[in-house]
Image 1 (spheres, rainbow over the protein chains, first blue to last red):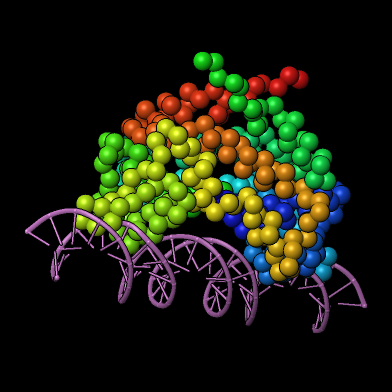
Image 2 (cartoon, rainbow over the protein chains, first blue to last red; image 1 turned 90 degrees about the vertical axis):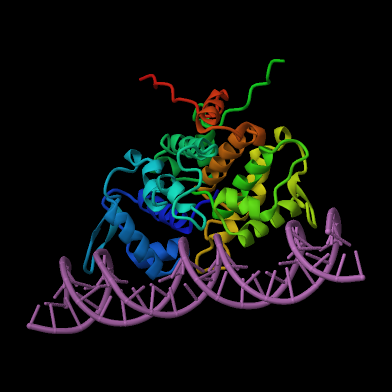
Length: 159
Length: 159
DNA sequence: TCCAATCTTGACAAAAAAGTAACGATTTGA
DNA sequence: TCAAATCGTTACTTTTTTGTCAAGATTGGA
């Protein structure tokens, strides 16, 4: 289970925009520089994010990108859903082996686990906004762990 | 964030073995048939799982694969760690863009989120054994949701 | 003994994901 | 008006992941 390049870099670009002062924007070369990626790659990512409605852009000499909504109103689950291309939804039809459909179609013992995991992740991400992950590592870490129940400790089992 | 093919099929093969009666085993062609994958692919997966110590094998006529430990003692987090090739551990060095190391090395605002997500998933998987996911979809689903706190509901926020 | 069934292993091929390039469209401002 | 700076879009290349193949090694049984 891992984060794709598109999710990683796409999110990082959005965080850069989230950190701007109101009214400011960033050009592709600026975003590329800030994230250590190529301008072409930044361009593709921003195209995706623009298409998905997270950012707006203006062209021409003073052009650039900026968030379409306040950073505090954009939750990470929405972003990952787009950048990750709805991984859960396509799961069963992605893993059909050499057949046309999964052999476990109809009754699958591991599907609840896969779906459940995605729900857990979705739940966690839905509690975090872009605004909350602008900052230093320690401040973001503190924020993350302060969210009640986001990573609960297992209570000792009664025997 | 998604499950890789290796994780998916590898886990499915293990579940097949977990469902066997004690003393029984499955050959590669049998596993391949049961999971709808090619024998060659099953071979590679079982090789990985054998190397990692999850299964044992015997060669020759009457050979096959069986679990190296009781299904009730094998937790899903161990399995995913091997099949997913330690995704978290390699995260930062995987996403360095066009540079040799990540621009956010040292202080990264999104690392706590990535690491935290992986912890949440790890935590959930560590509470489930192979034995628990042998069965029908509804029984496994019930098992999953009966684990206290595995997918907690967000409490309404006080305003 | 020797054949058939099985696992083992590394090299290779195909598919998918990631990243790049090229060219077009829009805007600003001289 | 037009050149420079910018975004927009699609096609292409590279890299990674996935899957296949082929030859070898081991075992059981006739």
